[in-house]
Image (cartoon, rainbow over all chains, first blue to last red; front, side, top):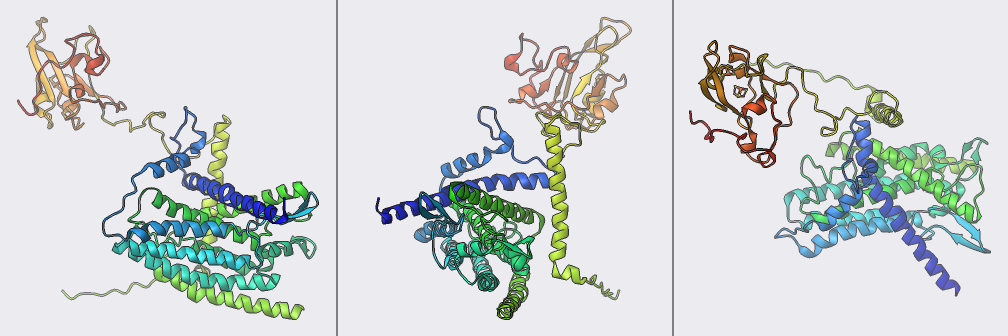
Length: 351
Length: 195
Ligand code: SF4
Ligand code: SF4
């Protein structure tokens, strides 16, 4: 096989892995985790009635039942909506979320059969910007849905979504500038590689130890960017139902999945930039076994971050909109900029 | 009267509360504790150990419904020592019933010491409001209400009518289609409120 064909095939395989193995699987599983985790921490049992031949396996069939329900439900389009944009909105949301997922570094470079194989689906020297751009573009789906639905509630939700996500994208940029300067690169894979080794010989040289403030701010801004409680104002089920109020069936399901996928993307970024990515402290990973260990390590960290984010989602009540914006503009942004300045200064002095 | 205005001062928020992060951690500690304690309890119970349950959920059809000891559910007609119903057909319960769902046909009793007895005694459980007045009204303590028998539903209105043998538990309450012999069902055609 020619080298070009090999690399194209390899990229396709990796993207498929990111989309299906990571994206769809974990997103489906998150629906179950969401139900069960909330149930356990609220002293309940949670959904456990879907069964196949009498087997229930802790309610694991519920995501399947959900998918079947969503796919077979009537796709109701109210009169007065702009059909084209009404249909395009969920595709935009989900599509860009998936693209973001494809640039997350699930593993580094391994040498198998005398060749170097990179385990990042979309290898790019500006991977970080790519992911941020995809997260930002996802906003268009929300705005489009809010506008095309021809409903005041949806429009309100779309407006809120736009204000919230643009504010927090700016915060996100300011927060991530510090680690980007620290690692001296925008390539997510290089960032992970720089997190190998130890600080003072004992703490792993991970971003959450070298940039603790940025890590915490990132988790907050990331939750806001993925529109999940406590920042689910674009939805606001209790007040306005939100930008997807006029959607039903699988189109609604796509919005639902977008939230999950964006959560996975944000968690993936957190793992790659702050939690050492695929690094296992004190181990040099290479070869086939190295690739497996890399993937396992990355997915484990990803699931841990998702678990914590889910716990936060079920612990905190929703913010008010002015609180949300003032948190973003008056607290997170100045803190992130201060952190950025201190980091640059530190790097300058250290050099 | 002059309106009075009272200023209620808001409690001052401490620095720790204002930066919010610590409070979030406190909240998370509560939920994490619940999560792991409940998870451990679920796991231990799955292994067959007798620990406290990890959830307060009552999974009703599998677990029995637990009502209060004095809950009023289905009616029961009590019997004398010889097995005949205690009811003397005085119609006090039928009279007091606010839902008008008791229907009694009295007849002459063969026992000279007892004036009357009930030929038929139907209660339309579908109309009953479970007030318990019938129990209180009865002068001979012939009618009671069970405390924990809530599974009274049926597919038709006719099947909600309990007849005397069923109220005495002489025959099980079955839907009309499943009843063994004819003639055990309701004896009076019911028109509600037609007294
Ligand atoms: S409980 Fe009340 S409503 Fe029901 S039969 Fe007795 S008196 Fe009538
Ligand atoms: S009040 Fe008692 S004795 Fe009188 S008819 Fe009712 S059940 Fe029978």
